[in-house]
Length: 214
View 1: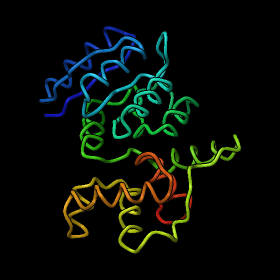
View 2: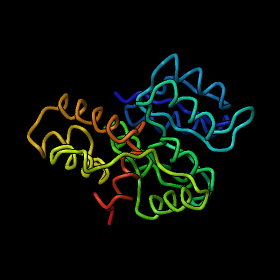
View 3: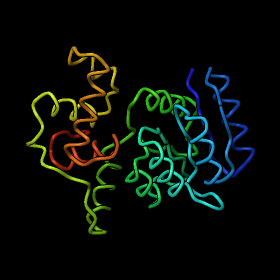
View 4: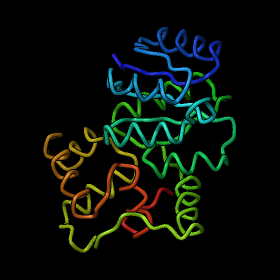
């Protein structure tokens, strides 16, 4: 059963999401009305997936995402937004959110996104990945980086598959290794490349030409 935390300042929206997710066999372990509550709930309950609204009082979704990922780099955050090109979405993805979903998405799209992220995937479509990379460049920021030449062949393949959206389980099946080995190799890749999370790793792989999403 996938455990979900909902963070949104509109009670009716939270209640609607709860009803939908519970009807699909998921468990809503908490509802947060602002970013500070989201951080506290996430630290206390360690949900499988966090649905995070961008615009919230006290602390917005971007800062809440940043704080949550500082506490737990493996947290899986999906940004909920009204606008696909919202600049805040870029900031949240740069901080390590696994992707985003529009508030007007249908139920099947939302459920699929949650299941994919719970399975370890990142929801990075080509346009979003390029937009985030452009945002780094425009602000004269850089991704944490190392030399991918330091990666061996197996590590490079794991990084490529991660960037293409495959979960740890799927990577393990494709490479005929255990999920534990995949997790260990990813930890080593992150250390070598000075990366903090899967989203940064996917962006790094795209930027360096190791993988593409097309």
